[in-house]
Length: 320
Image 1 (spheres, helix red, strand yellow):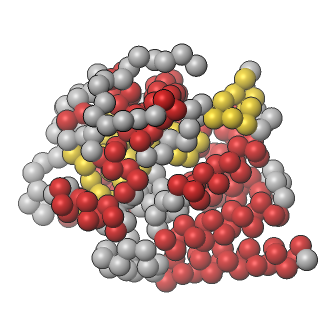
Image 2: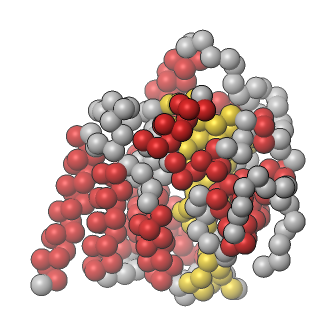
């Protein structure tokens, strides 16, 4: 895949593979971008946004600023849990893989819910599993199935508070993009369902509409996310100093550092510390636990962990 030539001078080193992944994600995002839906904002999200506005903060986003946009991380920022794990559950239901792979997904999701943060090794393992599963399948087939999986496992996991923040940017006339290590097809479905502009995600190679089982570049994680945002901003004529970015993870500090308005949303311990040191804005929409107790699950989180663990144990016993 030829370089797109969109990148502005970089402030920090980036590997050739992360640049390639970022450029591929930006190109895919622009091709799949759709107009925002005319859907109304949920009532509870409106209340959360109004409360934030009444806290005496300067008006933001600025209405009519077409050189500004917003970039939202997905996992644990917009949605509870990891999209790749929910997608895996849906594929298992449709018999794309066997019980031993489901056990692996169950343990990974249980760990993710307990820790509340991304771990590159766990996420890479999950993506490798997903690539082997979709190899040989048509892109159109997975997109269709992805719509069903969103309804089954993801729709009820959207954080209303983060959804309100995204809607504020849309109402101001700005574009809003998801930025995630999840497959770009899955991310695009979620973005469309939420009425957002589009999504930057990990691009899996396909030939004649069929997945090859390889990635373009590397997973869109950490520095690669920053490269994707930089490439998209250059292609769209955006001023990054006027843009906003939102994430829960310290892994996204490179992306957050690119923009003039970084937000730490449901932050992990490292990001919370970093955000406070740099006076970044913080938002925490998690319920059932104090924001300071990052990584300690609420009753619902413990239930999900127990459920995931029980599923793994049950499957292990059935294989014996």
